[in-house]
Amino acid sequence: MLSLRPVTRPALEQGPGGTPGGFGSFIAGVLMVAAGGYLLLNQVQVTTSFWNFGGQGSFGLSLLPLLAGIALLFFNGRSFVGWLLTAIGAVIIVAGILMHMDVYFRQTSLFNTLMMLGLLFAGIGLVARSLRSS
Image 1: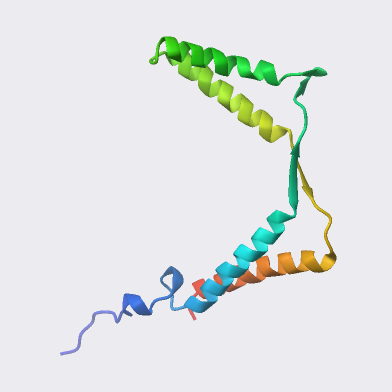
Image 2 (image 1 turned 90 degrees about the vertical axis):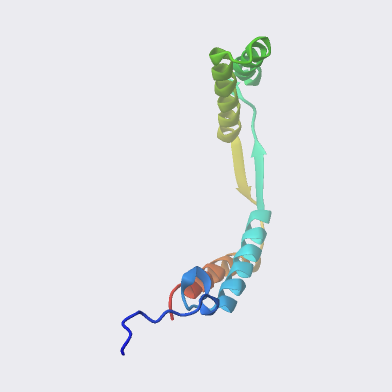
């Protein structure tokens, strides 16, 4: 009698993403993305500037809600206002740090830049190719 069940491939024969694409291409692509990404991010320099508000330094002022919240939490650990002030203070500090960051790409040769970007995008292409069915 003829069986109408679909023919499935064993799980061991399937490649990345459940497709029959190449596992070797996937690994090579991931390694290339990792190498290119590392080299690219290694050329980026991150600095920060002073917190200014009206011409005056304001980092100490941003600590006030956090410190008041911590004090309230030590007095009463179930204090809603304490938790709210602590959370708001932490958000203000993280937002202030992110808003005052300056990101620079360090000087490098054109060859190094092309190698970094080439590795990164060639790896992305290999990973994408390995995930589609052949």
